[in-house]
Amino acid sequence: MKRTRKLAGAPHRTASAAWDVLTTLISDTLAASPHITAADVASALAPLKGIGPALVAGGHLGTTPVVLVSDNLHLSITVATDDAALDVIENLNPVPGGGSATTDWTLYLPVPAPLASILATAAKQTGHLSTEPAPDERQAETASAARTGGAINLEALKSLRSPS
Image (cartoon, rainbow, N blue to C red; front, side, top):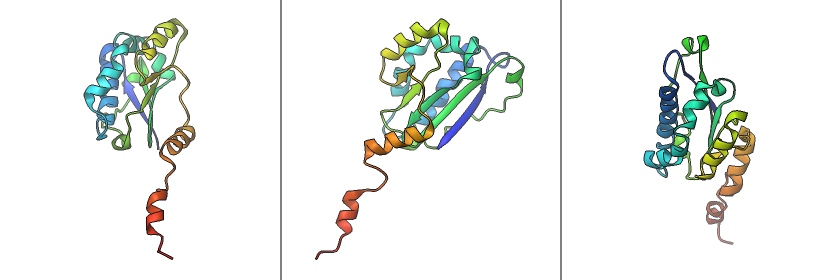
């Protein structure tokens, strides 16, 4: 299910603090899964430590979200700045769907021209970051179904078949 969150940047909080809130939201959401720990998420997001705040400070996340995708989870996060930040009502609770996330989650990043090469380098450091366009919700669900064999457990159906 597609979810969105809007966070407040400057003047409500600094770009670094806004990035910290964003990464905490991602970590709290994914750590609800029995397959993912907060330490795993922190390690995967570490290459963005200096770049993430630059995305916020440059206003890039005000118009183009970072998108977190995993099984049954499609979360777009934007960060409002300037006057728009003053009107944001934040929901910082873990996002529903995080409990079903798998270890193959991906955070899709916007790629503004001034940061393109450094973002590409960061994305290459972990399999959880991508500078490719984020799949829409339907594409993400189709890919998830293909990996898991679909929503129907064929083995369970076979076991229900009555003996002939």
